[in-house]
Image 1 (cartoon, rainbow, N blue to C red):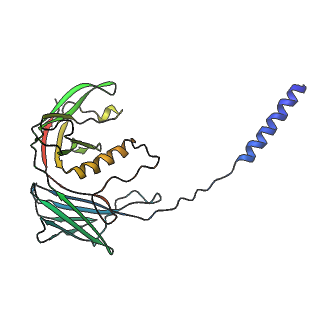
Image 2 (tube, rainbow, N blue to C red; image 1 turned 90 degrees about the horizontal axis):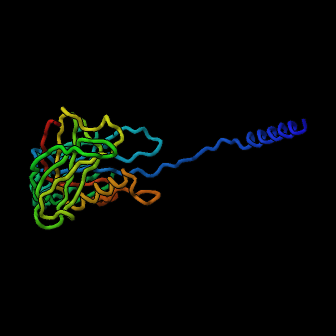
Image 3 (cartoon, helix red, strand yellow; image 1 turned 30 degrees about the vertical axis):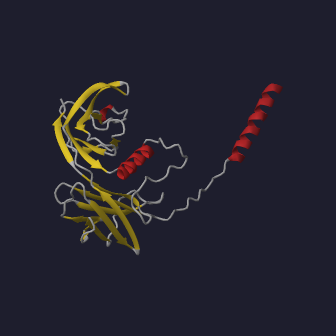
Amino acid sequence: MKRFKRNLLLLIVLGAMSAGCQKVIHLSIEGVAKKYVIEATVADNTDFYNVIISQTLNIADSNLFRGVPNALVTISEDGKTPVPLADKGNGIYHANVSGRPGHTYNLVVKVDGQVFTASSTMPVKVPLDSVYINERPFLGRMQKIAAVAFTDPPGEGNAYRFTQYVNDRKEITIFVTNDKLFDGRSVSYELLVFSSDEESDLKTGDHLKVEMRCISMDNYMYWYSLSQSALGQNQSASPGNPVTNITGGALGHFSANTYATKTIIVR
């Protein structure tokens, strides 16, 4: 009986201590100053001077894209007369002009009293020879994996970015590489998607499209740093923003790049 009373008293004391420790903690999360985000591209395919301007979001903001209107945007080739880009709405600016490999392009964005500039030289165009499917064990299961074949020209400094679409759905994985390990050689590059979801695997009959862009090394660094942050491979407790080639304090990138694409049916 005494043992029972001791246990009962112990439970009452522990319950009182637990109740006394319950306290609502209100966190005050302060917003940070918003930055402009500029995604600008000059490509060698038809009519492609394209710029998208937005702003960063605070943690309390709704996760909806809001483009920045009323910016003045120009792009010039090799220091010639700048071409103004028309405001198409929702932060999209466009001009029906194509770029050319070997030429340098200069971007100027003026918005809300701020000026942002960037420069990018379009690399030589490397043909996309083929897109095909490899089938092998990956992530513990047999998978069909998209692969591309191309020949890297001699001389280090070439970089490439690929985009994969399956049944018109864009894969969010960032595929980027450079020629440090394969300079001047024929290349077979697999587009590896790290997903445990078998539903996202390539399947027989899928419509597969792959886009290839030859990009500058500063743009390679932008996409590489962005991919490392996305994969959680940055060792910093507070990962920084991706490397940018835009001056003036904006985030994003300006890329003068070539463009090629091929489409196949997965077998």
